[in-house]
Length: 428
Image (cartoon, rainbow, N blue to C red):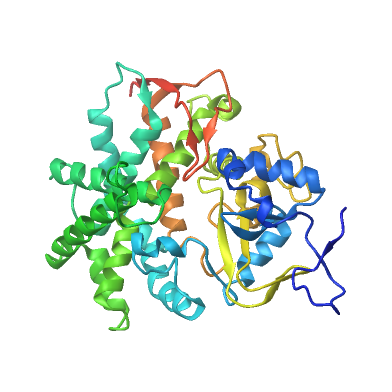
C-alpha cells in the first residue's frame, strides 16, 4: 500500500494519510457521476484499501467503503461534521437532515414517537385502503411498470397520513402533488442556482424552488384545516419549541418525493430479482414473514435505494486512524460497505439466508445509523412489507428471466429499463 503524508501536514505528525490523491489535477467528479459504484470499487482495488483519498466536486474527499469504519463514522461524526448537501438546504428548508447535533437530537425525540411501531399500526387501515384502490384500478391487460406503481402507492399513503387527503376523494389534488413533488425532487440533480441562464432556459433548480413554494402553500392550507392528525400531534408534542416554518419544512420533507422514490426503489428491485427468491414461495405461492424480511434485507444490501452520502468536517478532526482537516469531505458508500468482503461472506452473491439471525441484522445500513439515521424506518419498513404481502397475496407475477437489471444509481437507485411485468389476479 502506498504511503501518503498525513492530511494535517504537521511536520511532527507520525500518522499517514489514506491512499490516493486529491490535488487540483486529480478531480474525479465526472468519473464518479458516470458510475459511482464502479468508481468506488475500482478505486478500492487500485489502492488496495476500502478507505481512500480522492477529489470530488472540487473538494478533498475521503471515501469510506469499509463496513466497520462507516458504522463507527455514522455513529460518532455528528459533532464534527455537517451534511454535505448543505447547498440544498434552501430546496427542502431547514430540517432534521441539516440540523446540528443538539437540534437533531431534540427533533428526533419529538419525531420518533410519531413514526414508532404503535403509530405505524394506527396507519394500517390507511395503507390497506390505498392498496385496495390500487388493485381495483390496476390494468392487468398490459405490462406493468412496478417502480412507477409502487411510487404512486407510497405517495398516496404519505399524502393521506401527512396531509389528511385521500386520493380517492380528490384525484386532482393527488395528481397536482405528484407533479409538484416530481419537479421539486428534480432540483436535487440540478446546480443549486435559483436563476436562469440566458439561452439555456429556465433552470431545473429554479423550477424546483417554484414547486417548493407551491407545495408549502398547499401544506399550510391543508394543515390549517386540521385535516392531519399526524401534524396535530407533531405540533402539540413539541411544546412550542419548534417554529411554524420548521414544522412546515418537516411536513414538506415527509410529503415530497423522497420517501416514495425510496420505497419504489426497494419494491421494484425486490420483484426484479424475483427469480432469485421464488424457490422460497410455499405451495400457496406465499412467503413466510421471516423469509420476506430476509429477502428485503438482502435486496437492500445489494441495491440500497440511497447508495451513500457526504459529510464535511466543520473542524480539524479524525476518521478512524486518519487526521481530517476542516473542510475535508467524507463520502460514504452504503452500497460498497454492504459489499465489504470483511463484513459479508460472498458479498456479490444474493443470499437472503445471511439475515436469518436477528443479531446479524444490526449490520444492515439500508436505513443509515447514528443521529441522522432514517427516523421513518418503522413506517417505511412496514409499508414495504405490506405492499409485498398484498401484491403476492392478490396477484400471480411472472418474474423476469434476466437479473439483476442494469440500474441507475443517482439520485435514487432504480432499474434503468424497468421490466414490464405480466400480472394475473389470484382466484379466491
